Image 1 (cartoon, rainbow, N blue to C red):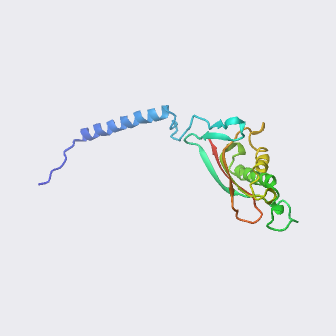
Image 2: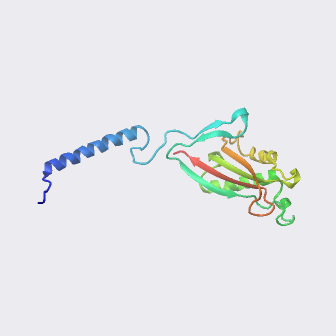
Image 3: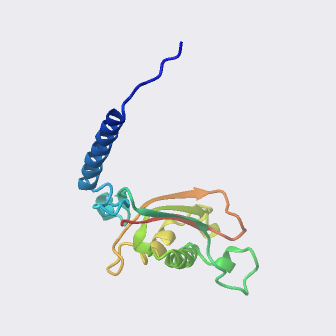
Length: 188
C-alpha cells in the first residue's frame, strides 16, 4: 500500500510564506548587526585595532582584523644586491643587516602598492635573520631595528604590526641575512 501526502496547495503556500517571513526576519537581524549590508555584501563596521607593546617597543602586541576585511599574504622577500662589485653571494654584496632590512622593506612597500595597500596596512610580520659574521655569527637585531623603525611607528606612518623576529641557520641564497614576510589587511 502506498500512501501519498495530500498537502493542499494552501498548506504548501502557508509553509512557503512562513519560511519567507523567517528569512526576512533573520536578514533584518544580520543587517542590523552589521554582518551583512543591505546591498548583501559583507561589511565590518569596526576598524583594524592595534594594541601597543609594553614599554613603547615599536611593534603591536596584538592586532585585531574585523570580519569582512581584505587580507593579503606576501611571501617572504629578500634584499636586492647593494654592491654589484662585491663578491657574488657574499654579505658585502647585499650589505649589513640594516641595509638588507631597508632594501627588503622597500620591496615589500612596492609589492603592497601593487595591491593598493601600504606599509600602514601591515598587520603581521615575520622577520628571519641569519647570524652576521661581523657579530660573531649572532643576528644583528639592532641593525634590523634601525632599518625597521624607518618604516613603522614614525610620524608619517604610525601603524605597527604584530611581529616575530628569529635567527635562522640560512636563507635561500648565500650572503642573505634578512627575509621578511608580511600579512596586510584593509577593513571595508
